[in-house]
Length: 248
Length: 248
Image 1 (cartoon, each protein chain N blue to C red):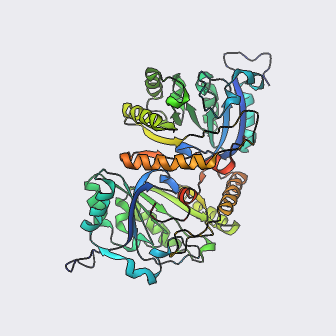
Image 2: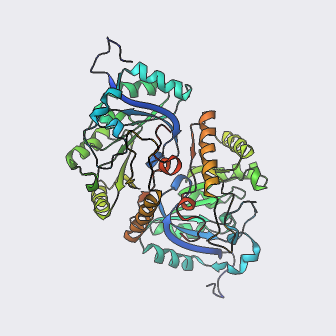
Image 3: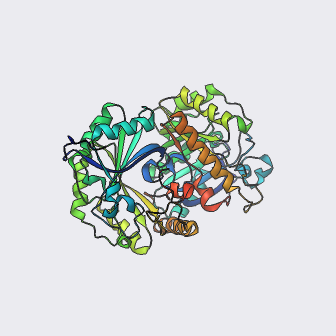
């Protein structure tokens, strides 16, 4: 879809655009949304559930699209009725999303973005919801705490900001508590990890639902035991509803 | 626990106090909370999932408790750490809850109340969250729309107010849409009904989880088809996690 006259500095690498479906996670759980998933990531988490938007071997599936082309898809999917657009990835902070957000805002749409918080952008301030999801030890990634603080500073008083942590084990839980303590003014969502993430080639791969539920129960107990009453504990609703299926 | 000097006009009929556990429904989904469930209801919904707090044959299990006695339980359960207290029932609007709310607020606790919206109370304005859950046709109940409007007026600008609708079928869905249209400024949550609610005597009764999931999928499709993007669609998370088990 990229035309020859598409200026590369404004092109957005898109992995997929789909919906409307309900947001399955975190602060917007249950809310109808169209997902705009960008391609490319500065991280490679061990348990990534979106490898098709992360690994460079899939880069030929990503399309460099301009704002107009992306918007045509969003409008078609939403029937022109404004809704919440969820910008995800990969790491969508890599992409130049400012113009897309401005374009959609003029039409009454709203924007939520989820990122690990490794790259700050001044257009974070234009978002309606910013979900910062720093990756815990089980991911195999290292957190740049200064970059995370930069993301919060960039967003300022613009969007609603929340922290979301994937938790697999005690080390992840301790990481989430410590990270939350750095930013006590920010709401926290905890999410049990899916240790059977979808292989990018297989939409119907088996999920260990019982394992996810066990981890969810453990996480609720852990939060209650700690009296960490400000944290919310939510599973990935779309996994409970649709398994690892893509595009729903 | 009711003492002989307990003034009857301040006694609160309690069915159960339990937690902390996460709120399984609606706007506070995932949030750790202590539940204070009152006994008695002016409704008798066909699919009620809390008959032990509704039917008068269970009234001998309900205790008339004063604020101090209730608060001793809440503080013990929460370890004295302030959290969100969920007032439910039965219909908690029947009870004189104003003094309990004031008592807890002085200690840093917050209060959410869920009611069908049949009885308005001036202390609704003191709540932190008011969930109005008018009952759709499948319940067998008739909605008093003036009473619902009175509840909204009583709450005023005090609490966050949301409408929550249980939806079993097309008639319920149409009811929810019409009710939401009466109060366009209020956030809406839709929840697929549990057509295998727990019999009050049996904690381990079988749940038709597949039926709930089917209804959830249908509801998501319905909302998307209608482009009702302001509505949130959420299942009862506690039912997915714990079945019909009580006290979790």
